[in-house]
Length: 191
Image (cartoon, rainbow, N blue to C red; front, side, top):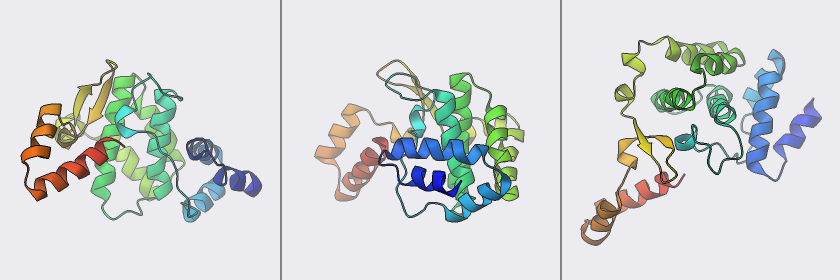
């Protein structure tokens, strides 16, 4: 088991390595799942699914369900060991709405990942599904659905949706702080 895990961690294709790790983790026994969470992230880079494109199919290697499951599994792997749990909450909201766009059951995916998680993280994941529709709505998290150039729907934070004329205006006329913010937003929008 340790050999297989080491082979996954050392794969050169970091995206494939992450997907293999997710499969390994979700199918491992409880002791192995605990060990994987303790060792997270093995001091290596992982390539996660693009959170905005989880429900998309065009130019994607994996199905929406597999990418959604993989990204939610990152919450389990991190085991809420993050600076601000609210960031994870907004991320989970985005994942939840991607499930709806992809026409896959959020409850099924959330339960599968929760069942592999620590008790605290499992509660965090399950509690999201138990929220009232209003409390898990796009509006409650400041999210919106955007149609991309391929005609597919993506989940976005409105601040990350910039049109060409706004970008050009800020590049030419923005003060240094606005230009720096624009640079950050454009970098974040390319992830």
